[in-house]
Length: 176
Image (tube, rainbow, N blue to C red; front, side, top):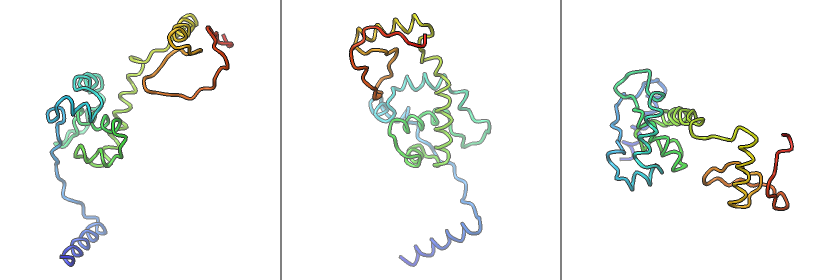
């Protein structure tokens, strides 16, 4: 048996040295929207199915491939690969195996989908644009949690700050 394995490894080395490519195969990719129930879907992707479909509707055009082949990776698969990467904090190869794609494809997909999602930023992340809006938000945050100089918050993000030393009920920017 060991001799047989050695021969296979030698053939693989010859194939690599001679530049012989592997036979092209089209892999069947799982459709996790259909396979998983709502609970398991949320556990794997950290979003509900309807939220994923809403997001897909906003970025679908950016994910469509310019090359038309039988094995194109669909926009929903691209989005799910990226969401799985975000949710698991895993390596590209793990996410690629999960979706039935190559590691290189996973890397390209995650970058493309991330850029598409980031392009939605102006639609969802809004900061105050006037001095009056900033001042009002600072007052509101201070009333809620006694945090001075705060004009916004992002869920689950903790940023180390230097203490201002005392509670400041209202703070105005010195540059304004």
